[in-house]
Image (cartoon, rainbow, N blue to C red; front, side, top):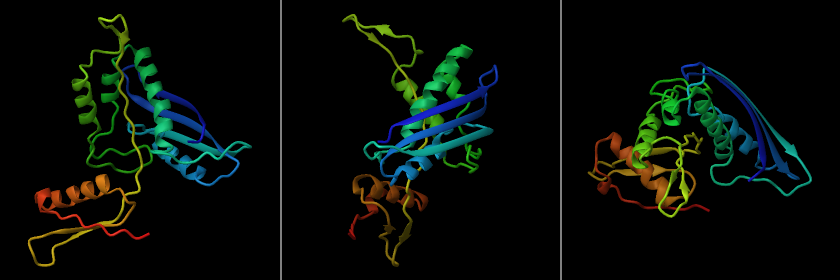
Length: 219
């Protein structure tokens, strides 16, 4: 990963409604700027998500230095800025005297909302995910609890949005009762193929068990 530094100012009202964010990200791209711009692009796209942010400005810079190459690695760009803005969300909630889960719930994107970068979002499940996580961990706020062995145990929550390289897909049935999903993209059969097939057959109301998986790899 490329080292980075994020400066962020986030505004909200006294009732906890987010109003604006001004973020600047600097990336140490190392001696060769190869994937650095793409890391910067992902970070800029996700720097204000997944929240309703009516006013947002994000500036990102890749800086060439005399250090080893900084490159992309697993969710690059989005995960780094998420750590920064989610830490800030906790700070804002604490300053307002609000529960961190309650604060996030009041600001997360809903179906049909405009994202900070202007898209109208659909099939949004982030509130349901956060509620399910809070229930599963027995959320009782951020105060640490002392365990029987004397250790302190704390809990935390975080939300983020990541841009994906979604492949193109289509479904054909060739006048039979067997449907064949076709998709092009990176090779992750254990995740991508089954996920895309599930989305496709869900739209036509079939069971996943009816879908055969035949993978052709072009190198």
